Image 1 (tube, rainbow, N blue to C red):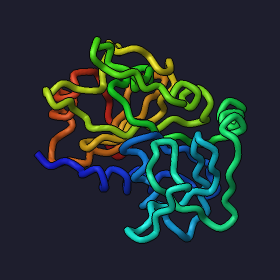
Image 2 (cartoon, one colour):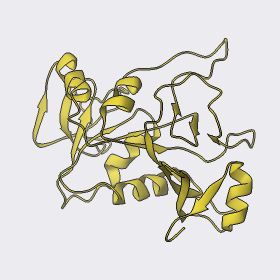
Image 3 (tube, rainbow, N blue to C red):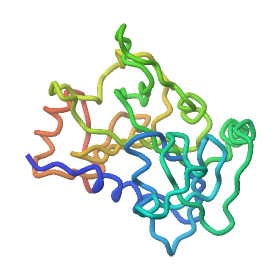
Length: 215
């Protein structure tokens, strides 16, 4: 079965972010989106640790130990970028000043509940970071994740079994198999990014979905 790579997933997400948007990219796989945004469009990237105007990841010789994102990864700063206290950064998030955030997830439910900070296992390390603030503060929440777990279970579920990060907050899910919208009437497949049929996608996912206009 054909699947998108993480880079291809990041490219797909980047295509949907409009010019002029203020965007936070969550720790982990979502940070790859920064490397695939069109440099001819003005998209302002935000990081919880107090950066506005991040660019793509630096080259091997361009790393600056004092310039990192919230995940402690080296980043670049575009002309006009700024640094500020993380309290001001969270004021931006909580004040509704971010148009989009892109987050990873362990699970997303059919009604857009997000579980991405803890698996509930006794030996798991909780890592909520700014996810709860972003899930409720951003105008649009995109999730970027593999469609299935390593054990072959769907990460898109009827109801989240992991601790909830935000309720009803997810608007669109990008996986290595499909792009799926969360709508008031249920999940709608926008695009299948694999060589499987709609029926096969539904069987793998295990929840009810309907075709979108181009799904």
